[in-house]
Amino acid sequence: MSVATSEVASAWRAPYLRTTTGIVALTLLFAFEALAVATIMPRIAEELDGLRWYPIAYAAPMAASVIALVVAGPAIDRHGPGPGLLAGLVIFCTGLVVSGLAPAMPVFLLGRLVHGLGAGVLGVGTYVVVAQAYPERLRAQTFAVLSAAWVLPALVGPVVAATVAHAVGWRWVFLGVPVLAVGAWLLIRTTPSTPGENRTQDFRVGAALLAAVGVMVVTLGGQRVVAGWPALVFAGVVVVVLAGRRLLPPGSWSGRRGLPSVIGTKGLISIAYASAEAYVPLLLTLARGLTLAQAGWVLTTGAVTWSAGAWLAAHWSVLRDEAVRVRLGCTLIASGVGGFALVAVPAVPLVVPMVAWGVAALGIGMATSTLSVLAMALAPAGGQGRTSSALQVNDNLAQSTALAVGSVLFAGLASRDPVGGATLLVVVAALVGVLSLVPAARLRP
Image (cartoon, rainbow, N blue to C red; front, top):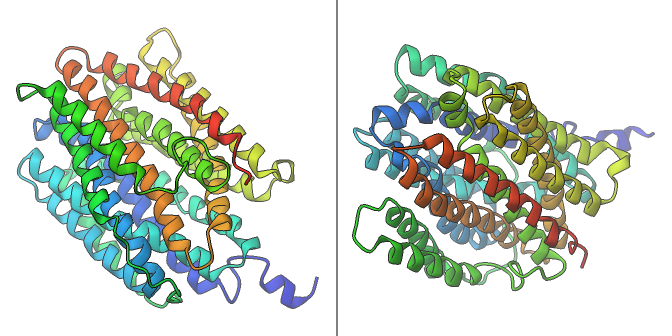
């Protein structure tokens, strides 16, 4: 192997080292925040008297990110990812500060909305950096590196968050993260940013706003605090479906071959995993009496096996076939999420649902990284931003809608049987994982 070939065989070598370092730093920040918040949400819901609003803390940022993704996609295609990364980081941190200072649950949820806007912009920017800065042969490796960047936050994030929440209060988990953002920005500000040739305007912002409003209408109606709430829930779902279809390539929800099925498959596995993950700490603490720190270690296990799945997808020759990798990942997600539902059965040893959650994470790591590579490969020339936007819009819209609809059930059971309600939602998530195998059979154009 020549020196020149060796130098471009890894994302960690010149000329890619600086770019890789920058996006990994950004991913570390995002990962720490996500895992820390998931760990301490039971404490937040208790202190702010907002257990019935628990699912909204997850649905709100995803709904808001739909708007950001639609705006950011074409904007980044026109101006390059650099300005978008800076704007996304500022908005992201603003949301964290609002949540950290929140005196009540509604203000906390407002901060989560703002945080979601920033996360949406950061997501598009990161995907476009990978598409622009790396040759196709290194993209799978780069997505695996980004998945691996979740390992360190997974090892320390939940424990640090639980320790901070116990020692000085959960608010400092939010207020401390923006400090880390300074270091991330110092790295990503030198990331290459190439404006694209796509100068067309995006007229889907209204549809994105309607879709986000639809999700919040479902969520608020599901709290059953107003007369006629079933009508609100139904109307919200209709708005999401009608507006959401305008935000995606035709056929994304009907299984059309190629890019639409890539988007559809990723949306379904996102629903399956995120809808279950939202209730992992809650079930572990309520059903099995674990502490926040102990429940956090289960999330840590999931993040580690997620990274392992992405690594296997990029390096294991047995899984060279991308379609096979995705179908295997979908199968592991469905079986793993279903196995975790056994956490509510006292006779089942705790190790069983813990291992099952690791299996689910292994599957989504394998499938997500592969689907991301497929999406970038199928993107039209100069349209990586729009394709990345569509991929993530569908993910976040699907997840937020699923969580919002799930909150309708959970709100009705939160005061009487929160464990039963959460377990039922995890079982439904496993069935969605099975459903993802349908579009996963139609990935090739």
